[in-house]
Image 1 (tube, rainbow over the protein chains, first blue to last red):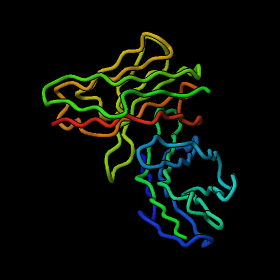
Image 2 (image 1 turned 30 degrees about the vertical axis):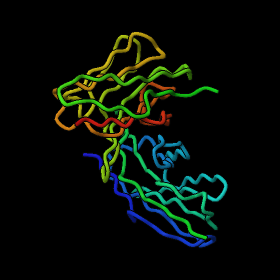
Image 3 (image 1 turned 60 degrees about the horizontal axis):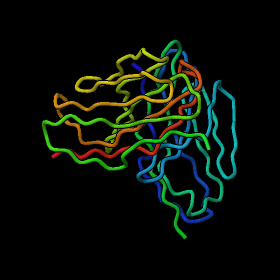
Image 4 (image 1 turned 90 degrees about the horizontal axis):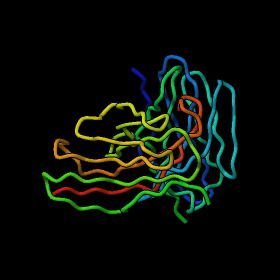
Length: 110
Length: 115
């Protein structure tokens, strides 16, 4: 059975304090790994798709990387507006669904 | 702007009543999905549809029903058979029929409370 584990569950950072969120996965035949951002009371907003080990994607202060067992979402010099829950999901070969992790709740303080 | 519209944002029902959640998309996507989100759990798939007039059960389909009569619409009915219906319900779509390698685009959810 596919499994996705995100850590830490919650993270509190000071503005400008860089850090990384982790998404570990076990899947038979990864087709894609997805990162989403979710604000309270809203639907998840798509950030990145990674398809193969070694791939990296960047958007503003966020950078996502992928290995054969895990993905990292690096946040460089975060701002309070980066506060949200970050979700990771994996799609497995031949399947028609994504398996989601439980998310990391990020709080960036002034 | 293209997107997914879910309505209503909040819904309150008495136990034993069926309730239908609306989901409309104007992205021209073939595939549509319903997920349920509960605190401390990952999103769980209820039903999905890859084409009009066809849909498949997800991991937690018991107590739910759907229809896909139009490409743009994928309503979800929460029936009285669903044991724990109070949750945040998310509708999504994807451009490709298999989600393994294409991202989902989500609506802003409907929070259902059943008392």
